[in-house]
Image (cartoon, rainbow, N blue to C red; front, side):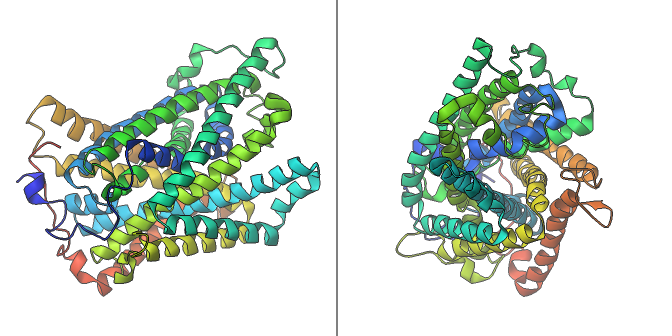
Length: 507
């Protein structure tokens, strides 16, 4: 049975009311880069990753890139056969059945809620830091630590991002061109300035690039390696947003896949440049500006922008603020369209399938995503700042889980096409199989390691590490919600809206 005949979903069920043809290849890549938010992710992940793997930071970034590339090939094949806004949810349901499909969708939703809370928190920090730099009043930066002020500012940012996303992809695309262009310009400036400091001898460490930095075998243990890759996966995460826009993209079966691969390629080049610049400038020691200094690890760019960029350091504050604000807005795309698809196919209440007539966007689901992320942020911020920092590591676990499930869904769905030709075997079997298994291995290893209270920030509940409780606990909550939905909406779980199938034709 071919993919076309077999259908990604049942006949007549694909159309969800979204506006088609709104985004081309360039627009999709810009939105993909925006969702990854390189300035935001690097400032939060460079320190923890360096503390796990030391000077092998570039190697880990490259290792993290490999499964992303392999999984992206699987995503491209699935999108070619079944362009559907539900992506992981729809494709996993089609390959493995409704139960695994539902949990794959939940993994994506959980990851986006976790990252939305972090994006909002980083945006607040850099907003007040920027005001302090503009006014010369250092006390303004301390407002970010004031819980009521922090929460109120965060909710304003969340509401603005939700409003732009509600207005559809045309509004999203217009905002992102400006914010992404500025972000890439400043990051490039930072890298060049850092290498210049190293060259003139004014850098604290002043290290020459060492080929050993690119050797992943130099990492001291597999646990440290897995932790580093989990964080590395986090910094690449977000490229799959271009697939969730497939029903609104020009060339729905081809453009999203090309955009995904192009986005990952742009990001890996940028990340390697920044990693090498920071390592050469700071080193991995525990000195004032060393990456091993725990006091600067949560916000690397805030600490290094002044020494690297001098009087232009404020541009980095603006850059990270723009990055987090841009990603805060574009990240709404994935959960909103996933919930839209889940409502459309009967896996969630029907109101989730509502589409704004004016903007042709999943209005109801977008608002729900904003409310859930806001409530999560408020609760976590009140409980502890450490909770929010631990969500970054927990997010890596979530991403490994649902990317891994989606990659294996590609392998299983196209199992009838493996013998057609070598290309089909490589793109629909070998590449996604290796990528998916790698990510699931990292997920299991990180889950085991994170049970140790010393993992992450060192926070614990009843002797169990907080990272484990956040990561595995949220997945367990998904099982509970799934069981409840199976009682209320049994048709989906009987396979009546998305029947299990397979393709014998290569994508």
